[in-house]
Amino acid sequence: MARMIGAGLIFSLCADLEMCTQGASTCLRLRACSKTDAKNVAPFSGSQMVLASALGKHGRKRKAVVHLMEAHQVSQRRACKVLQIDRSSARYLSLRGDDAELRDAIKRVSRERRRFGCRRVQVMVTREGFAVNHKKVRRIYIEETLQVPHRGGRKRALGTRKPMVVPDGPNQRWSLNFVSDALADARRFRILAVVDDFNREDLVLVADTSLSGQPVARELDRSISERGMPKTIVSDNCTEFASMAILKWVQDTCIDWHY
Image (spheres, rainbow, N blue to C red):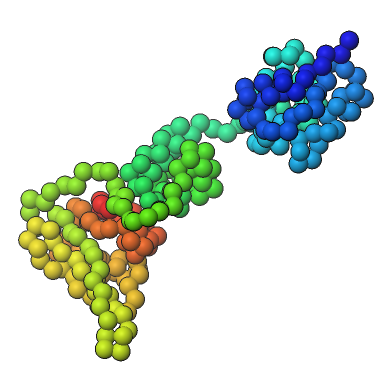
């Protein structure tokens, strides 16, 4: 006799896998002939399939196959046919290496730089010595659900969690900011201001109608050539100070940039 699995058991199976979907009103038949299997699986084909569409990735599908085999004592061939999964996919063993250190580094950088996206996180972990491309970083970044949330309402300070070192001498900590104003003809311009936090000396005052990350890095190089390299630079996380040009400059100079 063929064993029938009712709709209630389908819901139980989906709940175990945390992927339960609505619409499982038709029952599946296991341990029956192939014609009966095809007849019972047919209503689940396409976009309305209860399990295959809900499971999504192959790793979850393999877990579903193992669950059917252990819970209902069926063969792998029968479980794969009911769930419409290729047997080679169910038997696949990943050859991917252990990325535990890289994964920990990505999570640590994301915790410290909470407004950094995937590309900027890749620059930070590359600075630590990991030879990795953006595709692998993006995969781990998504798997760990580290995506930067969209801001809503008023802006809040979301900088690094590292403690800020108090300077006890000149040329130890610099602060950067922009000042904006308008000309008589209503054209806007901005002034890049760099200040030594210990003696409050103005190191840079550069005015221009457009100041992106590259001009900022160029002015910092000029100041360093005249006064030496500071230990820490402090700024907000506006687009100019958090651009790829500034991240590349920080990577080359090894200066601690505090947002």
